[in-house]
Amino acid sequence: MTTSEKRSFSFRLRRSFGDGGSTNSRNSNNNSSTCTNHNNHHNQKRCSTPLTPTSTSTGRLEVPGASVSRRSSIYRKPDKNDGGQIHLIPDVELPLMTFADQYNIEKTLAEGCFAKILLCRHRPTNTTVVLKAVHAELTTIKEFQKEFHYNYELSHHRHILSAYAVAFQTMDYFVFAMEHAPYGDLASNIGPNGLHETACKLIAEQLSSALGFMHSKNLVHRDLKIENVLVFTPDFARVKLCDFGATTKKGLPVHKVKHTWTSCVPPEQLELIKNERFQCLPISDSWQFGILLYNILTGNPPWQAADWGKDQAYANFMKYEQRKTTKVPDNFRRFSPRLMRCFRKYLSHDAEDRCKITEVNKYMKDRWVECRISASKSATLISPNQQYQDSCIYLNQREGRLSGDENKLRFKRMMSSYGLDIPIDQTMVRRRVWDWLSTCDANFDPEIESLHALDMAQ
Ligand SMILES: Nc1ncnc2c1ncn2[C@@H]1O[C@H](COP(=O)(O)OP(=O)(O)OP(=O)(O)O)[C@@H](O)[C@H]1O
Image (cartoon, rainbow, N blue to C red; front, side, top):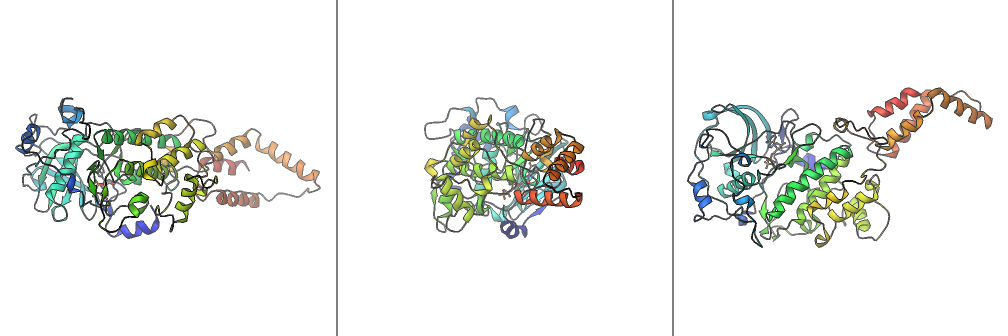
């Protein structure tokens, strides 16, 4: 996200100890997808049961995957134009209680205008949970029920955050419980230069699976961004999609998601006038997936806004994407032709030309980054063993084929063959190499280990 975007959000964002992410938006406009069916057996059962932590039959907090049979609504084959019963949002009865009745609040993980994310201990079961407490004044009960319902029903998927069958209200909040992601969100794990290709592939695979699952149920997430991807293992082998506040059934009329980063807004939505509605389609997730992919690979979004009239970075990409030029935009130059092909499909200006969310799987065996000279600290957690992972290491390894002394000797010999037998100022050489490298790539990371090795060799 851009600096200006960051600034505009900072006044309503509070993170705690690098754990959280932004809780800066609440979509308040897609209630049209909310649908209640009181005749439905499944719904009746859930409506009549207040979802408090003690209401489960086992007396334990329950996540659907473990306790609900595979015949439950989510696994039923969707009707032709529907996602099955998943779209029937029950009127869940929310018992009134205080947090202190059953929970010890250990920490506020994130806090924004609309919701607080609290790390808690549920005393009766001695379970660590995260409570999402949405300000009751800023949302409707229908909206809250919709978010909770979709999160709970989608929890079966391995890469979707699990919600417990626990929801209640306090005087000020509507609250539901979910599992805790120990490493926070992707935003707090990506260094200024992005993650290593290996990690990005892992993340892409998991997210495309989660979103593909949602799309198969005719659901569109609509708010995919790095803050809405939670990290469960430091090597990113387990990440999960969260925040279903904007999730909507495919085909319904919606407004733009409010308070999201403009870089995440697809071009066709940027063009809309205020309060104009449009049809909710999965291709908006595809767009956001493309942005997220670029974001995790580089540490930044590719442009501020997909507005070719105002944003030169987007205009350059659009010309390339629409084959009006063969010049790869500067900020994409590090990527392989295969990945560029993939980006073209996700970030197509014309929404109809955009690919399905799972397209990225066709590119998993390809090399993605070609001339990358930097890696973030978190990327080094993966500690890739492959040779020539990036140009910097490559440079270093080529250098390494001859010992430092041999190199110096060769260099001296070459200089004297030109009649330039002058002493070499090593400090100057080092400074010039650093300068040159930093002009090669704005994302140059001076901490990269291999560069230090190069430095040492001199
Ligand atoms: N289960 C969890 N474990 C750890 N951190 C979490 C969890 N859920 C949410 N968070 C943190 O809280 C942040 C906000 O959560 P969430 O997106 O659900 O709230 P929100 O108010 O809907 O925010 P927004 O709409 O801006 O995305 C996340 O970006 C993440 O950093």
